[in-house]
Length: 424
Image (cartoon, rainbow, N blue to C red):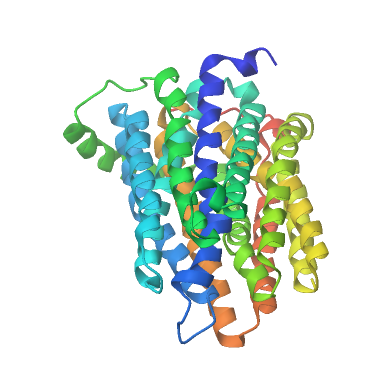
């Protein structure tokens, strides 16, 4: 545990604390609420699920196009921290810009939201890649879990601040709860920016390659990208895991992004929905740490399989959900496994890739996650648009978990099978 709290590890994990304000306050809770009640209000359609699903898919598509090239450049040029800073700034600028969008202007709101998502997701490529720079391989599970645990706690506290602003708007100088909700995007930007500083100051990036200029890094990076495509195909355990991850993490991200909209369409009251997300955050904090220890004891693959089974149960349960108390039960179960499946996936992948190409390979990792995140929201949007039934839209997600679990069962387990980490 002493090694876990080294300065650079804590500084790295605090970035999860920082950007989880965006993931929780903006993506999961306040943007869907404000979109439904403010920007989309007065529209000819009441189906907010379809435009939200399309916006989330577009965000993911942009990252799919950018991630592999940027990852290759970052490895060649020693630019992981610099790229992380650039994308963080993009996220901060656009999420704070949501405050100035007027009522009814839902297309502009979705466009700015999508660009903020590009900043968030792009920065995560390089944040994930820095895991191998700050952690010994024997501690990857628990260090990865520490990041997600602090993310849940930080996101939960940021959400709590936003709830206080919204509940007592006049006390803080706002004319209405709606105005306070919009101001929560400024809270997100300040929180995200402030708590990113420790990583930028304390984390030292490993110099695997000789550092070169940006232009040289771009040329070498694109060439290396083509080589990496060939290498991923050669490393069976890597591409098979990425394929499994593509499906099951799609289900996870789709639930995160669309759960609030699902609750709204079931006519659950706004404050009850927000409380449910607080449950996820504060249960997710200790649960992510426990799941990290579970990964050390049982193996990361086993931990992931347990979480997939839990998500299948959540999806079935959510289909028949009828009241807010059942939504709280669902939130509790999600809180227990959400951080675990994310952290163990990251640490499992870090074990099986070449250490000297971490940003490049994590570029592919994020491609699979974000390309999958195109499919899931789009699937929900299409099913909802055709059927008009949000319950059927939720149930459609179960196929993603099922396919992911089946493919993962064929992936060799590095811990159990004695597989050595890949080398350059």
